[in-house]
Amino acid sequence: MIGTGILKGMAVTLRNFAGSYFEKDRLITVQYPEERNPLPENYRNFPILIYDTDDAEAGLRCVACKICEKECPPQCIYIIKSDDKKPDYMGKPQFYPKVFDIDISVCMSCQICVEVCPFEAIKMDKDFELSKRERFDALLFRKEELSKSNEYYHRIHPVEAAAVDANLTAAAAAAEAKKKAAAAAAAAKPATPAPPTPPRGSTSAPGEAPPATTKS
Ligand code: SF4
Ligand code: SF4
Image (tube, rainbow, N blue to C red; front, side, top):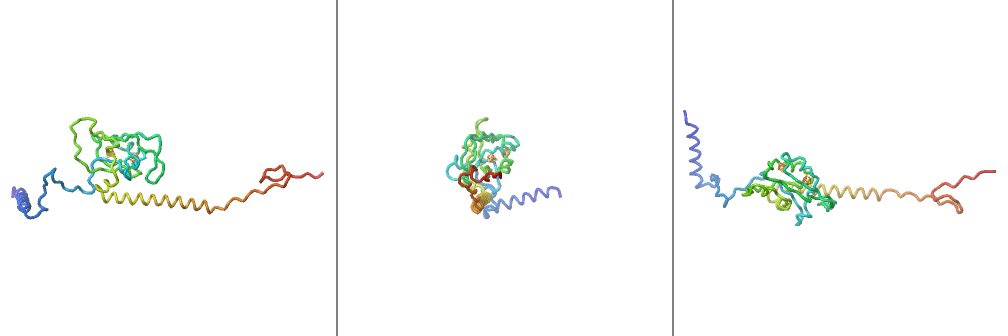
């Protein structure tokens, strides 16, 4: 019969309308912005830079390797590498970004920068309330605006952040174990015996064979 689909649709709407007075799950709208639905774990918007400790500058994980800049499809990342180095999260001296900008008016949220980063330094934010009245520079985010703590990362992506922390801890432990094994191997190596001392009056240097004597 023509119109059966419309009638079925209206029946579902009517059931949800009446049911929403008794079951909270049937109430599918919220009074935004006063009320907000929780975002799913995998929701993503624009990239952020993660730092450890309380110091956004010293704790920044990014080492300015520029892989993300090269791989970003619309080329909206701009990095200038530092001239000096600072210790990374494992205490290894590394370069850092003197400048790290992302033009989020161009970013297409593809997450390729996150996938290619070898240092777990760039992740996707969930903040979507970023509209601005200005047309140009307001959406060009600088390093200071992009930098977010690891605690913030844990708040927005708890499962993913826990997995990243576990990876970083395992990598640090493996590096430490390798360092200890190399030190132990160096200590166990037998010492090189001292070269023989030449007889008194000899012109040979220590370790050198004495000159051959000729018979008359
Ligand atoms: S999410 Fe995609 S478009 Fe945006 S900065 Fe990363 S690589 Fe570029
Ligand atoms: S965010 Fe990652 S890939 Fe991009 S420059 Fe920093 S360390 Fe390299």
